[in-house]
Image 1: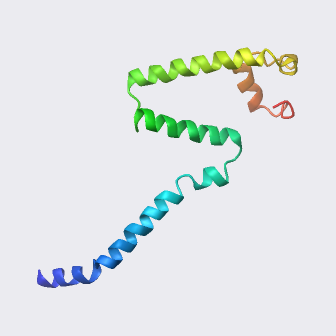
Image 2: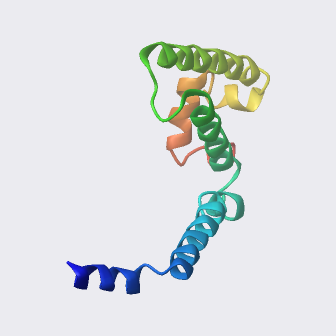
Image 3: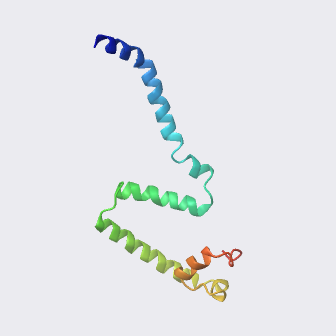
Length: 116
C-alpha cells in the first residue's frame, strides 16, 4: 500500500494539477462558443445558438411539461408574427408562400433559392 501511495505522490504533484485545471478552464472559456462566434454558418445559426443559451439560462438543462407548454405558446406567437410579416412581401405571395408552413416547404426545395 505504501508503494501505491509513493507512486500517487509522483503523479499528483500540485504544479501539474494546477496546470491541468488551468488548461481546462481556458478550454472551457474559449471553445464552447468559439465556433459559433467565428464560424457561425450565417445569422440563423447564431440566432439558434443565442436562443439555446437563453433557454438554458431560463429553464436549465431540462424542460418540465409546464415549461414546454410555455415554449409552445411562445412558438405559436412567433409563427403568428411571421405570418403577419409575410403578408407584406408580394414576391412571396406570388410564388405561393403565404404562411409559415408553406415557407418551410419552400425553404426545403431548391426552386426558391433566390427568393430566400
